[in-house]
Length: 164
Image (cartoon, rainbow, N blue to C red; front, side, top):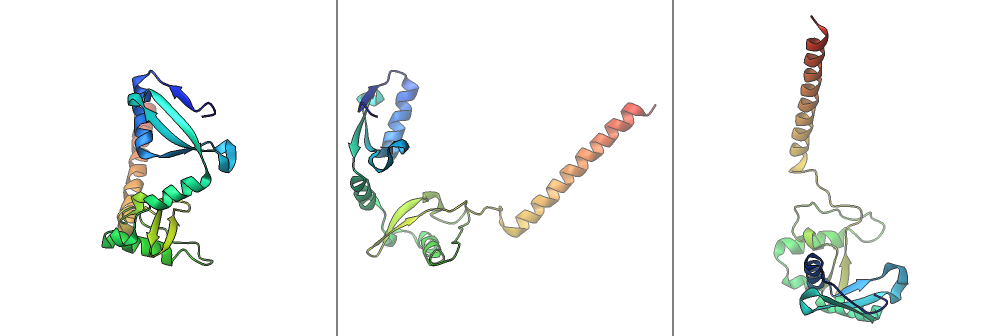
């Protein structure tokens, strides 16, 4: 990134670079601090990569411009955003959405609600015990059955091996 551009000949690498450029407008050199942001440009079908330095303000403005509007979300997605915002203020630990909640697959993200731009992200992980407490209990039962079968198999092996 320090030189600003590079050429790539390997087709697999070129395909990866095209996917990265389609997904991300900016890249960051984490060792460079707040001045380490670059606009990523992939040209010539992925064989030429350019990284032009941009300011932190440019990144912030582009993020704000591209952030979705709360009003444009589906009702389920709005409920997830509301739960995150309502339970993640003050001294509370926050709200951990379930992995099946709508919009969780978009986190971390910025989102406009009214005239306020929020940054939504998960702290730790998204809760996922499967299909609720019942699924958790069934999983424990299946795990116990597996342990019992392993012990029974070991016992049969030992019996056959050491008994005449």
